[in-house]
Amino acid sequence: MGALLLVFVSNQWSRALIYYINNFNIPITPEAAQLYANIDIGYNTEQYSILASVGFTSAFALASLFAGEVVAKYDRAKINTVAALAWSAALAFGSLATTFPQLLLSRSLMGFAMAATTPV
Image 1: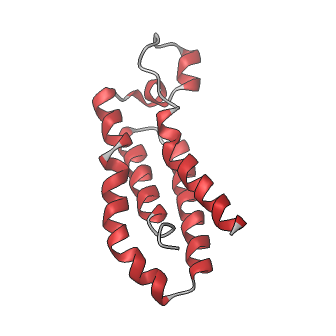
Image 2: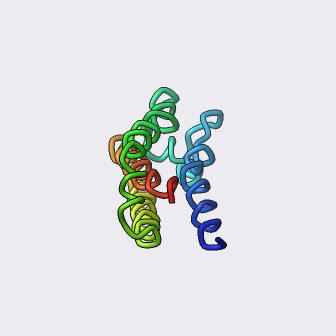
């Protein structure tokens, strides 16, 4: 149960991270670009809203349709491990993103992988 709790906390933290790495209320400076993804990559508030909502949620919802059946048929511990590794890789990919489409792909892959942990 403790391992599932840690996976759940990591899941929630990883999906919410996008909310904390943006700031649209400060001047654009090299120092701000080191702190905030929207300044570093150069996306606007409309693009941010896609990242924070449908970019993640559409993949999560689609994968959730099948996740319950997969978890019922296969080893839950292995599925949970693979899902955690997959969303960690997606998060790492997002940290290396230099364009909005790359960051959007990262969020979508993260949503897809995180859907498998919900029914576990």
